[in-house]
Length: 317
Length: 295
Image (cartoon, rainbow over all chains, first blue to last red; front, side, top):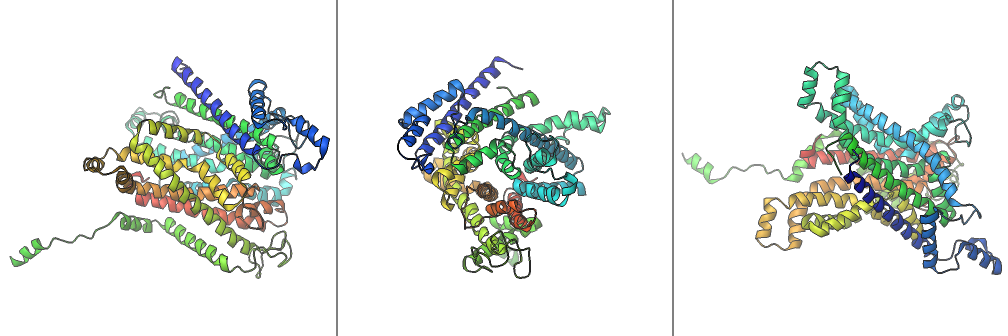
């Protein structure tokens, strides 16, 4: 499967990703540094203390020199610089730690999305035009019309307020808390994934309906295979192809959606850091986290494109 | 005999069903889409009314007790400053509609010509435009929009610009695809043979034939833009106080969700219903205008 062509393709994509990451973070870097004033103005320092601080961050040098140093630092040392608000806090370790937290929530959300979406879609297709089908189809429109923070709000209301005794008051994220705390992981992941699960369900239903009418399914049935085997081994595999086309937008959606959800549930991940840094005007962290996100989204898209090859051997790069 | 001659002389008048009347007939049959249309009409009316009249002034503080639950005088209760939530919700509808429709108008202005050029001329122009579209698809849209709003300053105009910058590609890609397939059709060839100028070809022949999918896409784009604005406002980088937005109202409500759940429930339901209505309308329009892709 890993032919030379595939490797060349992966190489090209990686170059393109690196290009995009550098391009977008350059735009953000230069854009932010063009804002009037500087990041330290709010501290109302005067004279030498102010100069020393400017020098500490290298902000007294020409913009292009700062930019070049920044890019060199990112590329050679993976160094995203130092926080402007919390002096002495280096961004790279911070961002890596938060990435782990975000990945946990996002990964679970992805499993929810695909698992729930596929299951509901398959059932709706197999029971086409029954009440179950109508119920699932309508729910899915409702599902993708609800912003994730609305779903989150209702989940918090139900589990955090009305069923407070059941969840034992341990609702919100606590560092070092038990992984199974419901508000810590499961509900955020569900709120994050549900809108996309609805989309996956709709697509799965549509493509399943197309596939199960085809001749090779009838052949499989004539051979006497069980319905389960027909559905899972024969129909689903072909029905998956159109579903995979939305995996890319879906992964991006979960990554960007996590910004909202993490702020909602107080999860100390990348998304919370990003929004808080924008509000705190900590430009260094904004650029650092954004660079991380751009790379992440690029890699996610690459992985999704490679997944096509695994599902559909007819596709080659 | 005479009657037969008369019948031949006067050709039978078929009732001509244009694309639009046909579509309207199909749309009316779709009950969900019809309900959605009525809801949206009411919403627009409410937004218009709120420009001249709201039950209380939307920024008036302390018109009743803070966190007051819904009552006869304040149908949806009051928020943390004792402001009337219904009044704020009505003004918030303005924000949502302006952002949703304004964004799509700009997206049409940007995306349609770009898509037409790429699809009609193919070649290097198409390669360049497609590359740019792919690069834009690869960036995390909400994050870029947040940074853009942050750089430009949070005003309604800048929010709209930021959404357009990060979401123009859907329309461009759709129009490109339409133009790619339409350019091979006979009527386009005939037009070209007759010497029609490029502008006439693009906007007079290709565009009208792609109008159905474009309208559907724009209809789905409106709720996407409204959702985007709600996200931005929810995170505090969108519409700034005292102007209420459904997103920022939900955000304010979260802090007091334990003792004043109505603060978060009211804007959440308004937002969900509106997005749902646009999605149902979009589904209905797709079935009505583009019968080939009917599910």
